[in-house]
Image (tube, rainbow, N blue to C red):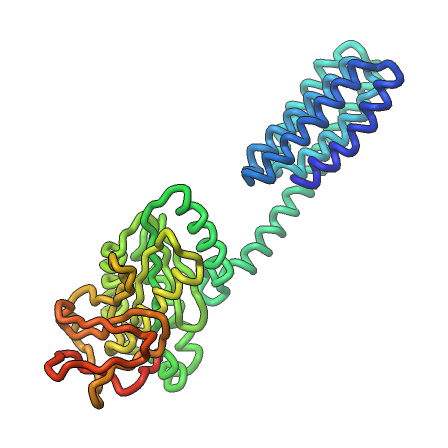
Amino acid sequence: MLYGAGLTFLFLVPFSIYRFFTGDLTLAAIDMVMALLMVLIFTQAWQSKRIKYLNRFSVMMFMLGILSVMYLKGADTVFWAFPAMGATYFLLKSVPALFANIIFIGLTTLLFHGKLTNAEAMSIYPSLALVGLFGFILSMRAEYNNNKLQKLVSEDTLTGIKNRRSFDEKVDELLVNYKRYPKPVSMLLFDLDKFKTINDTKGHHKGDQVLIDFAKLVKSKIRTTDFIYRFGGEEFVVIAKNSSLEDSGNLADSIRKLIKESDELSKYQVTVSVGVSEIMPFDDAESWFRRADLALYESKSAGRDTVRIAEIGDDTKLSFKALSNYQNIKPLRTKANYLICPYKDTHSSLLKDNPGKNKSFKAGAVKRKLSNNSSIKPSTKSLARH
């Protein structure tokens, strides 16, 4: 679109200047108006990125300009119809371009009705029809190939859901939209617990089937407005639009229960840990994902098969809270009176079954001595995520 507008401008300006000096002021004005419109379209496309509507406007202006030239100069200028029809397939999708060209041929027929000999008419109109037909076929083929390539680069070949590349693009898009329309959007980061054990004991083909079944189950649970991605390995991400942190935490917990109780996955004792974070005004892609990743780490540290939500308080400190009481949470091991966290410059909590007894600590300090009567049982080291 941008290149086409620029090239059209560079092509029309010399024509306009030539016609001005040869005394053809009407056509010079038409050429100059079209050139200026191309500049306007180029500017709008660069600023707004609304290429779809600008393409339609470009086609309409270009065809009206060509029809005006043919009306003023007569049948000798009918050859300008061919590049006009060809350019339509570069600016529009195949079907809209075909309809635009049919309308253009119809207007050209009305314009030259009674002005062409039978021989001229039999040369021009079939040629225009063939240009439109072949352009449509080539455009359809190009769209088909482009869709196949787009699918290859945007979808995970195993599970059929979107891949990390698509996830990165969607996050960038959501961050831009959030600045204009600040509506809640949450990120749910899933990690299948001890997935390596399934591959080692059951075989990689069974592991692949677990991933496929997991993706299907999650997809069946989320809304049509939500998005699911395979982030890599056994990690998946769900983007929940118009969903608060609490609502997304409930969604994550319902998916956790669905996975644990499903007939397809229960025979492999599959469970999933989840970290949830909500987009914030100061976020970029890295910070938003980082909070979900930290919450997932807390979920793993709490014994797996749990959900943790990353919450930022009024003091801007980050804490991780359990959505509710869970069974099968292993007690954290103790040694001396220190909490140990693998992340710096982060505020966190290690959680017991009762979230009301949480104690926060500053991870940047790496460790902090607890009071003797503290109810928290600290870990001896950073627990592995898998």
